[in-house]
Image 1 (cartoon, helix red, strand yellow):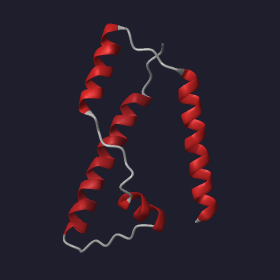
Image 2 (tube, one colour):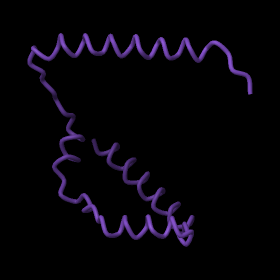
Image 3 (spheres, one colour):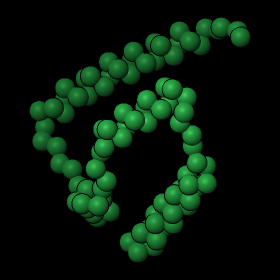
Length: 95
């Protein structure tokens, strides 16, 4: 792999962008900000159907991955992906 001078240019750009963002945030911090959510965003935010976070289950899965005994059911993942896409398409048609 060849290392060229573009890596130093990228880091210079990042630092310049960071400085610019800092000055913009200072300028807008004194002004009042107003945010408007779309109808869909409001619906998603207010829906109580969101599953609860299960820290115990996450810890179990993390342990299974660490021990190499976690298996992925590709068919179940594909089924849920298709279901999710279908729900998204139907919600866009309604709105």
